[in-house]
Length: 477
Image 1 (tube, rainbow, N blue to C red):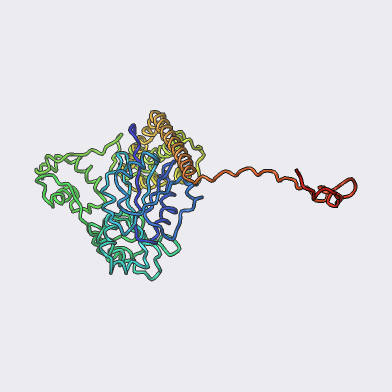
Image 2: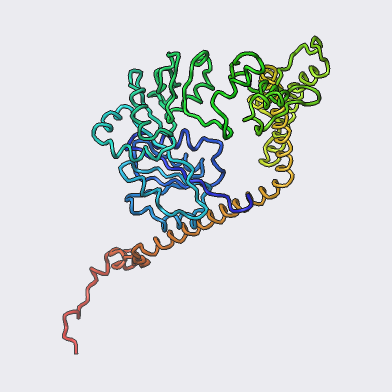
C-alpha cells in the first residue's frame, strides 16, 4: 500500500486471426480493474482487426509495434517504463513465438504479471491439434484463461475441453458463439457424467464441480459425490470411533452430514460420560456452543414464543435478525467510504441497491435454515468488515490521494516528454530535408519604346525615318 503500486502486465496470445485484438478491445480493456492512465499496448503481429486511432485516443492507449521476438528484452521493457510510465501493459503476443521466452524476461521491478489469456479459433482447432499440437499446447499450458471462439452449434465442445484440460487442468475455459456470446456450460460440457447417482470428481475437475455445484445445486441433490479431500483426525483416533460415541449418545449411528454442530455440543455436554467409555477421546478439544443461555448448534425458529424456553429461543431468533440489519449497515458504510476514496457520487445504482437488500435477505433465510452459529459468523463478519472499511476510509484515503497525485504527475511528465520528443523529431526532420535555392527577385521589364513614337516628328509619326539629309553620304574627316 505504502510502496510503489505494481504495474499489471497482461499477456494475450494466440495464432493469427484467433481473436486476440477483439479480446483486448471488447473484454480486457472494459474491465473495472483497468487502472486510469496510460495503457501501453505492445502488438507483435497485425491481424484483420485493427486499433483505430479514435479508439486508442479515447482509451489513452499508446501502441508499439514489434517485428521480431528479439526486440522483447529487459532493456526494451526498462525503456518502456522510463519513457511512458504506463498504468498497465498489454502484450498482444505472436502465437508462433515461444511464450516461455516472454515469461522468462526480467521485467522492471514494479511490473507484475497478472495473467496470460489465450484465444483459440474453434474452426481451426482440430487442424492445429492434428498438425501443430506442440506449438498450440506450449502457449495454452501457461494460460489462466482460454477463450475458444467461433464455436458452431455442432462443435465438439466436450472433445475440445478434454484436449485442452489435459495440458492445463487449472485453466478457465470459455466457449463463445460465432456472434461472440458466451456459451453457458451444459451437462454435456462437464468432464463427468452428472446423470449418474454416484459422481467421481477427479482432482483436476474439482474446481469445475465446485463452481457448477454452486450455480446448479439441483443437479447434485441426492447424489453421492466422491472426491479426494483432507480430514483432520487426532492421533490415536480410529475410523469408527465416532460410531461408538453416536451409539453411546443416541443409541444408533447418526448421519454425520447434517448433525455436526449438534453432535459437537452433545459431546461437550457429555464429556465425562464419553471419556469414561472411550478413553482415547480424553485429549480431544471440546467446543462449547452455549451463548447467552442459548445453544448455537440449534436452529432458530420464527415463532420463538411457542418454544418451551422463551429466553434462549428469543436469543436464537435475534441472531439472524441482527446479522441481517448489520449487513445492511455494512453495505451503506462501504458505499460511503468508497465514494470518498474514489470521489464518485454516493448515489447508488440499481445493482447496488439490489445487492444491499438481497444479501441481507439471503443471510436471513440462510441463518434461519442453519444452526445459529452460522448467524454469529455472519454477524461478526459484517461487524469486522464495517470496522475495516471505516479504518480504511479514515487512515488510508489521504495516502491514496497522494499516490494518485503522484501517478497523475508521472503521467503528465510522460505526456510532456512525448510532446518534446515529437517536437524534436519534427525539427530533425526539417533539418534533413534538402534546402531549396531561394528565388531571385525578377527585374522589372524595360518598357519598350514603340517605333511609332521613336520616329515621330511633331505630329507626323514616321517623319524621322523619311527625313532627308543631303550630306549623309559625304566623307567625314
